[in-house]
Image (cartoon, rainbow, N blue to C red):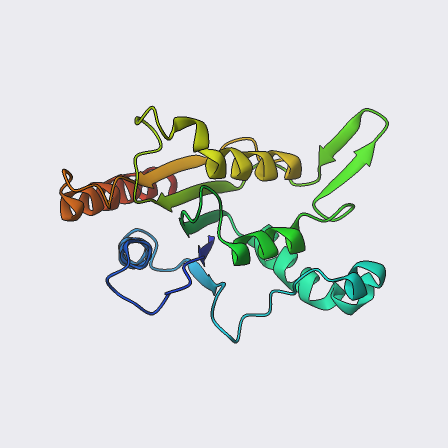
Length: 201
């Protein structure tokens, strides 16, 4: 089994960050559940990670980024399970995750256009979990439910490639004074661990 863990936190070295704690929980759980699995970690904000930004130059000459894109696409395709760890910024995904998606959502590689519209080129067998941390409660608070853009965006991207199911795991309301942040993080860790136990064989 091949597992890809994508950390999209800009502060990826800070152990106090919720996303980094959840990533560590996943790594610890996977060591127990699937000690022989191949686990690949992709840290989007690490300087050594090559995620090309789309520019006028490479948009007009795609060959400039073909190698980097093909490596990212091959890594994505060979994963049986993908965990996307993302801190919500201004209602949507962080910029490096958007850059990453722009490098894997490529016509004739992960989807194609037909006379009847777009068709995903992946077989849909991959399992994907999107793990999102947020300061506010976007699932229940009437002020924020209409701003719950990021999960919808991620589902759209995945469906475009042929992946029709996405597990959503939230650690939300972390900045609300009335909430117990530590307990919310622990609850998210438990949900993540339960999900991994259900999908890792």
